[in-house]
Length: 106
Image (cartoon, rainbow, N blue to C red):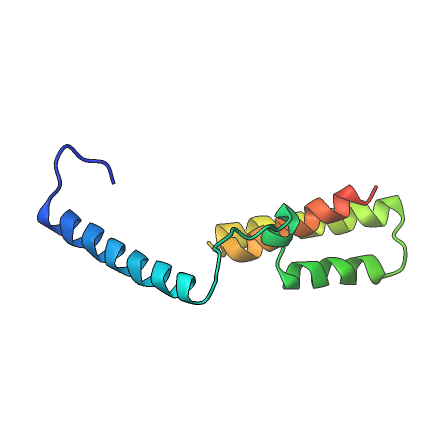
């Protein structure tokens, strides 16, 4: 937290955080747990399971000619833009990820 002075509510929040941290550290020590960060590739974090399955489905279809692939990419891009217009940003992001993966195939 950043401030010139600590307010009462800030003090309460800080004290509660320190109390919880103490409990967690005690538990970790009693159970020989060493906290460590997780390590994942960026693609694991970005791409959902559904996105990977959808991309796989597009790839499994017969090999697309260049014109068919461009038509498919344009269709996905149009669907992505429509999802964004409808404020369905999660769907738009999934479609964006599919586009990236399909374009990177070349």
